[in-house]
Image 1: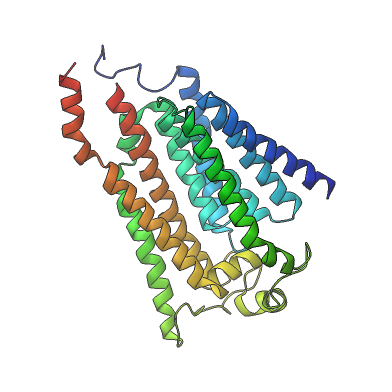
Image 2 (image 1 turned 90 degrees about the vertical axis):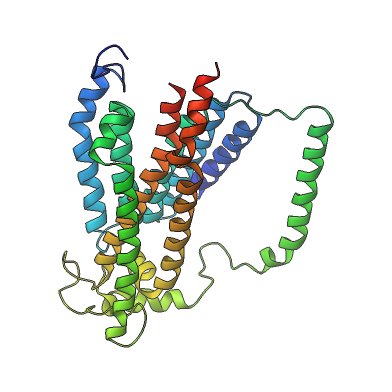
Length: 151
Length: 181
């Protein structure tokens, strides 16, 4: 409230420094869980929630305004709709081979490699976009704006 | 199996504490303990996919619960209200047990699969879908419809929250509240 950059927004300097160091690693771990969802435990839902948690970490540590400059609420809505559309498109693409949700190129690539399992990694990416952006939007609407209104 | 029973008793105790304790923050922490114990229980039952999902969703719910509800007052039922609430809860529990008694007796024993189709998935999953993780090959290939329905439910829920609590509708009310005092 005193200066133009409002240093009291967010948490203390210690939390901000630790956040700078860890938030990238958390997001990287989420991306790893999504991309390896067809090889190891995890998948689109868990990875999407971890990516959303990394952005929530930013909001909690740096305050609403600085975090929403990086990833705004309209962008979250856009990504969520994009993920849903991508998932439907992958499902409809099964009509190339005959029916809904057919695994179109299941037998390209070897099992246990990153590029295998046909549409399953693509579905994981779509669900990750949908879940991550959707839950982040819910968090922003329910928590961050409420905090702003209280101040 | 002993660890599982210890975890179950821990979860029941945590749930009772969450209901009975007066402080809202302590209740939320107790709910979080129940969720984390559930995650460990999934690990013991050899379901790491579920354990990861349960863990991260529990953390997200905990953050939203703490930040969104911590300023709210709790509504304590008093006197006759408390009796009505207790009687209603007991009645619904009796109703549930009455109708669930016959199906619960028909359940297969613990660890035995209820559906024979799971054996087919385990035998053919890797060959037919090429996915090494059998869980993702089931939820995204064999049971793709179910995942589509789940995704639709989540999409609808998020759209509903955004529509009810969006900033545009809140702005006028906020400024009015700000001006009054």
